[in-house]
Amino acid sequence: MTAEAKPRREPPRPGRKAKPGATPADIAGMIRVDQAGEYGAVRIYAGQLAVLGASPATARAAELVRHMAAQEDHHLETFDRLIAERDVRPTILAPVWHAAGFALGAATALMGEKAAMACTEAVEEVIDEHYARQQDRLKGRDSELEDVVARFRAEEIEHRDTARAEGAKEAPAYPVLTSVIKAGCRLAIRLSERI
Image 1 (cartoon, rainbow, N blue to C red):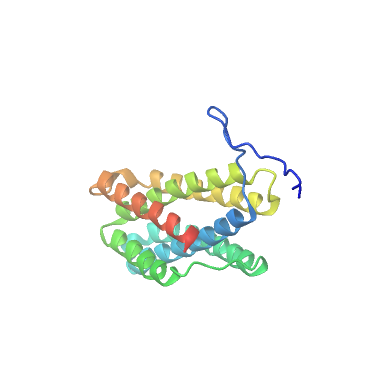
Image 2: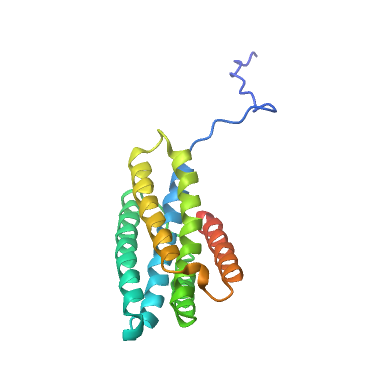
């Protein structure tokens, strides 16, 4: 009995990288993690507004947060739609992000307006990096998602820049605070992609 020879697929050799790109499973993971991230952002801003929106002394910061929160609401609505349209399983960690996001937002706002801005800067810096990697992987693979990621990335960069302009670096314990928040965001991304 002779077996038909299957075309042999060569593994990448040293010095040659496998062609980067997003498989359908990768794209589902991207939608899942992006929806979870936008949900977390909405909850962070809700926590900040619960504190900053309660005092006339923090009215300016609260107004900036309201503007960013409105954009995050739109991002979340978009990813909620993509989850439903593409039949992507959302993360089971949503209850964790619900509580953790609000707690992070409220805690940093209780530390002061600058700490709330440092939180925003740290989160948006990680999201900018995350969306940049997704854009690279999506090139020519999923034009709708690539466009969504590009538009939302631009708004996340705007949020980061607003936070910097509002004195994020003047927050108490800025280096420690932002390092911890960035590490938490990176962990949340890794978990939400899979779980």
